Length: 252
Image 1 (spheres, rainbow, N blue to C red):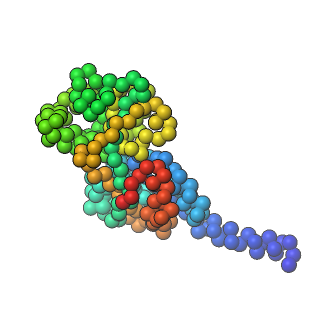
Image 2: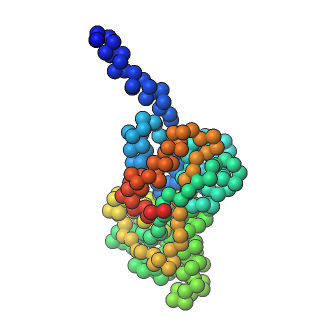
């Protein structure tokens, strides 16, 4: 076999792979940034596809999709932003691929908040996610549940919310405010306490009885490609779930 023929023979598989490779655009909640970044690299290496991500608050991504933005996959931090897109036909029926928990973060070594009750003390500066952001909605559910506990008092949620100094559009912005020392406390997902953030904050656990069920749905958009469906399958596969667990997510 001549060198020319040998080169052509060896080149055929790679040419075929390139021809079959597709671009997959994934809209994903901000809290998935690190985990999906690693998932995307693993998926691309395994399949030859190219995955690109847009991370933002789930409510922002939903609005973008409703206004004509193009995406192949949507991964939301709650069903409230996901379900309406399924109902309207923009998304195919999805599935829950991960769960999460809330935790309180405070600036390391300089916080006025040591316990849950301290959140309601006058003068404490708390940064929240906006109420339509998944983590903001979950936070308010926590406070409402705590207000039903006599140990905190019926007006606990009102007093804590009165300490708000800002409302942010996504959970990463919430964490950044505390990291920079602009607030005394905030509610974030446990998965957002990344190594970088962990060096700057102290965490206070939220008891299970107050933590709401936090579920992440994922699904493909209407007329999704085989590559998009393959990405969703990868996320829910054993390998995908191991990556999610590495970043602190709980099994679905």
